[in-house]
Length: 80
Image 1 (cartoon, rainbow, N blue to C red):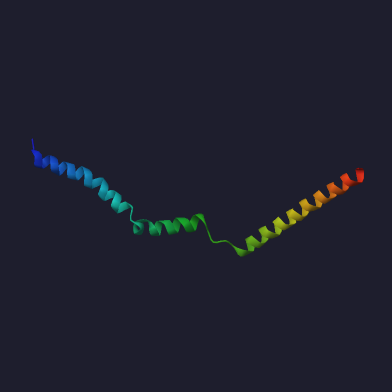
Image 2: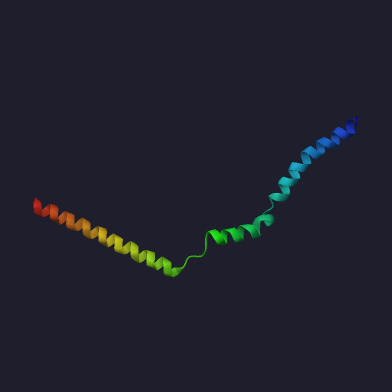
């Protein structure tokens, strides 16, 4: 067998290999370019025109709901 020196070497490799991989792969610079590309593809910049269309739609829906509620209230008030 190899003796205690071989066992110490093996133990050092067993411990340092995962620690070294953890250190290398958890560096922010390693992921920075990849994350910026992924973020840009998943969350593209908002189009101001699309936001305006959405806001107009929301306002129209609120007005429509409000008018329905007023009509229902008036109908209930007249029937009473």
